[in-house]
Amino acid sequence: MNRNIVIVCFLISITLFSRQVRAQETFINTVNMTYLDKLIATAKKNYPEVKSRQSQVKIAHSTYNQTKFAWLDGLTASYIYSPQNLVNQAKPSIFKGYQLAITLNIGQLLRNPASTNIASESFKIAQYQQAEYMLSLEAQVKRSYFTYLAAMAELRLRSGAVTDAGTAVKQLKYAFQKGETTFQIYNEQLTTYYNQNAFMLQAELATWTAKTNLEELLGIKLEDIK
Image (tube, rainbow, N blue to C red; front, side, top):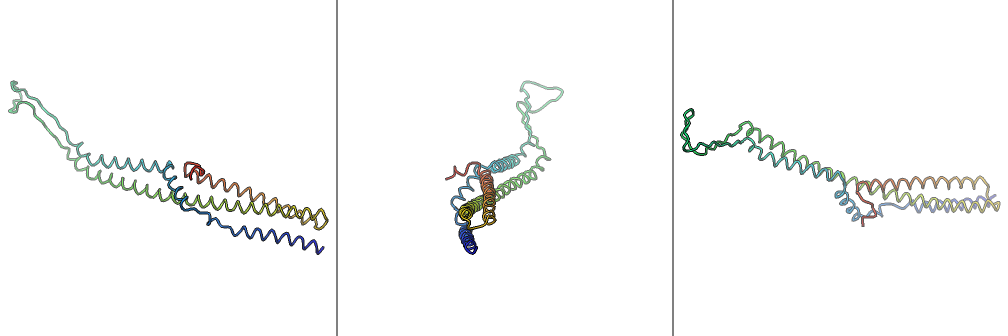
């Protein structure tokens, strides 16, 4: 019985040591800032909301330019032609030939500075909103990238745990067949192995989900970015 305890303790010690070594792994070492800058630039180029913000800025700028010359809408030009040899007895006129008349809408002229100021402020707001969104998008890409790296690190740990648990199961199975350990101990390690497999499946799902979320911001596959 003492021999059985020694064998079990030995297997557990190996498994725990291997897990401890893997647990020291950190995804910080896998962060590539140059690659991250490429991801951010790609997102700013491809993400539809960025293009929408750019269009809003262009519209606001066009509206501002239009209101700067809107006072011309208050001007009305007209002309009257009076032939030289025609005499109008009902409305005699001392002017002959072409007569040009220009009228100015004072109300339109007074309203124009206020409209121009509003359009100018709307243009600035569109620019500020675009700049704010760019910062927000950059932060989203960073968070998604870090989440993806963390998920891959977790997957590596879970994959290692499955390997360790599988190795322990094989060893205990051999020991059990030789009568050197009990079925209970073997069954407990087998349950651990199944649990580690379930954890690895969850880690795989988290990794693919993180990758999908990141690629949603990029507009292209990660593999297409070198």
